[in-house]
Amino acid sequence: MIQQKVNKFILLLIFFSFCFSLIVSKHYLSKYDKLSKHEGHIYHQMIKADPLRYMGHGDEISQNIKEGKNFFKTGRENYTKYLPPRIASLYFLIFNESLYDKKTGLIKTGIYFPYLFLQCLFFYSSILYFYFVIKDKFSSKINFFIIGFLSLEPTIFQYHGTFWSESIFFSIQIFILAFLFKEKKNNLNFLIMGALIGILSLQKQYAIFFIIPIILGYLVFEKQEKLKKISFLIFGFFILQFFLGINNYVRSGNFHVLTADMKHGAHMDLIAKVMSKKMNITSKEFNIIEGKAAKLWLDGNKITYNQNDESLIEEKSLYNYRDTILNESDKVNFDNFIAERSIKYFKENIFDFIKFIIKQSMHVMLLNPFHIYSDHNFVSGEIYYYSELHDKLIPYRIFYTILIYFICILGIVELYKLKKYEELSFLFLSLLYFYSLVSWHGNTRYFVPCVIYLSIFFSFGIVKISTFYKKLV
Image 1 (cartoon, rainbow, N blue to C red):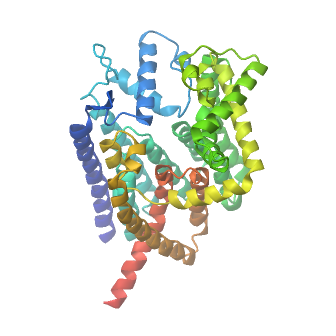
Image 2 (tube, rainbow, N blue to C red; image 1 turned 135 degrees about the vertical axis):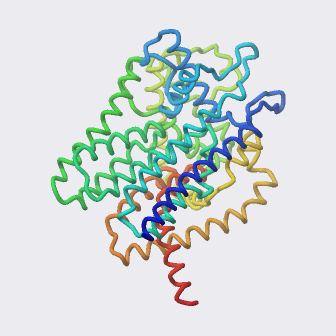
Image 3 (tube, rainbow, N blue to C red; image 1 turned 30 degrees about the vertical axis):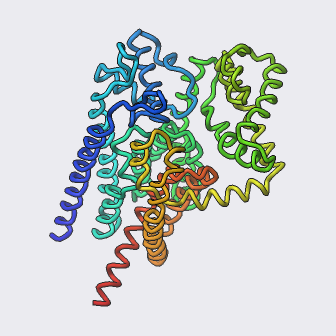
């Protein structure tokens, strides 16, 4: 009877958390769904930076489809994440909307609540499914705190009422975690899990190798027909990658699955910062030096590019040269060239990079429940980072981070004592994967996917603390 009451209470918690997310989404829209001006530039307070890239590309895809264009030929180069613009395009098509006002050319306002509603619904549906998987696996107390953490933890919760790609990414993570925690999995379960990992990589490209730690885990813990089951996992994953490759091939003539920023993100955010400091020059000056190498490569490989482009008149940097390349297939080869240069720089200056990465890796772990608040109130992250508000919030973030990590450490110890080795292994493999791929960047937003896995540690830690407290009183 008590168990049934707890189950009902957890279901109510999920429902009310979903309703709360809608209230917050509505609040965000009422306050920030508007156009503002900064230094003569008009921008939307919620749809800027990466969200503008996704929504803008999605609007282009939807317009192409309305014009009767083949889906595989719609849109432009997938410079970054593949799935977010397609989700946006689906929204624009279903609701017969567009991002821009035809008369003014500015971003529309007042049309986005259904988008955020569906995003919130998807997230809390993933939590509901996850709960039904674990409700007989852990105790009712553990389940309550797991679901409560995932539903309301502010670092995660803040993204559901926004146009960033995080919320949907978290949802897919939770679905995958549910399949990992299933007691009995048949071949279809492994096929679906592989497909989900493939979808996860389409939402954020750096998840593309996440299948590797999952395979390693099953090689150790799966007892029967492990190779057959892993084959289904791999097949489900590669179906999605093949679909992406075909899409890129039809549009560009080049079969590839890695996006541009996956190949040269390290050059922009790691190589340029370390080498400019070592050479005692600015990052801008370093990129101009790299621009000279880019020009030599373009001319040497007889790549067609617009040498009279206005951007090259202003600054002959590496990325200005990339923008002038006319053929998308040539851009793919150019990105490979950048990736090779990044590896070369890293090998030749390995200790400088290790020192920088260690520093960044410490910073990236600092939780930031205020990211969306600052994003809505500042025109860019660069301006916010040098503001008084940023410095004022640091002590609160440090306290919150230490508190969460302390409770999680207690939870890890408790899981180990209970001999939950398989759960611990998959959680640590997932954490290490997502942490290692973003640790060098230093941007705390990139660390948030790791927080999904902390939910399990946190719940065991909280229950341990509550048990200890009851003994004291």
